[in-house]
Length: 347
Image 1 (cartoon, rainbow, N blue to C red):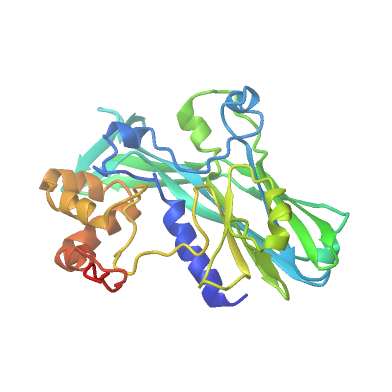
Image 2: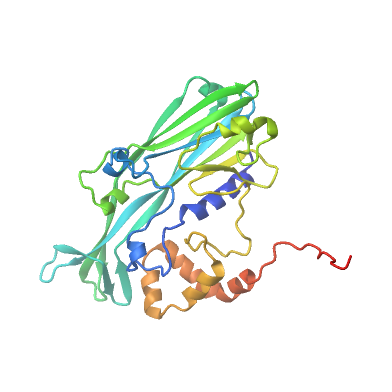
């Protein structure tokens, strides 16, 4: 397992991490962005939607490893931890009383209430021997946070503030290994959201307790993973016995490499690639860079201003598109992936 292959897994996973995070027309006022939904969301295990079977609180990866008990497994669990950004304006006639607003313009700057995100990762490294007949459960926690920043008007008067708040989230990762043959093992990695359920049942509050876009990256040293999509003939039955819940494990890297797996909440093939012509993420599932570039170019100045002030990642998308739109369109329009000779019908 080399850093370059792990980096490739991260590139694919990062594109997936933000699928659905912000959709065209890239403004908080759009209905589909008020009720955003990423892939691979894990709810707190005691949430009513989980208890009635409507939403998941866990995912589980099962895959095959060829190796020995001394083979080392690295597991990296990643997800988005949501953070609320609430703009509060000073109530008229008061100096320290605030009321929440959807957006506020101060000078030329628009300040928008929004839900941001912070990338989280938990990493474990264990030998297969440590897990044989002895499952390991590791608990993790990311604490709450609160940041308050004042907003001043052009003359320096306090007119509003921004409150950024995160709720604490907790979870567990459970790893186990079953030996199938002398050099063959089935590895299981379960991720579960154990965050205590909030007393309220409104979606904005629950969103802050989500594991959004939860996925797992696995690496092996002194061993190799077996493709579950195209296993060797003598491993097909074992591959079919792997039960994956909410995720789809695929090999990552160059074809023929077998030391990194991405367990994705969306269906992928082995060795997924990011198109080299793509300038960056547009956050839209099954995105078409050329179409979305053209759409961003047609936004009005007011729409671009609202987009720019939603989120740093969305602002970066806009700035990238404005700076390099012509080059993006040239690269993506009519890209050729390969050529083959035409069949001669006259023979």
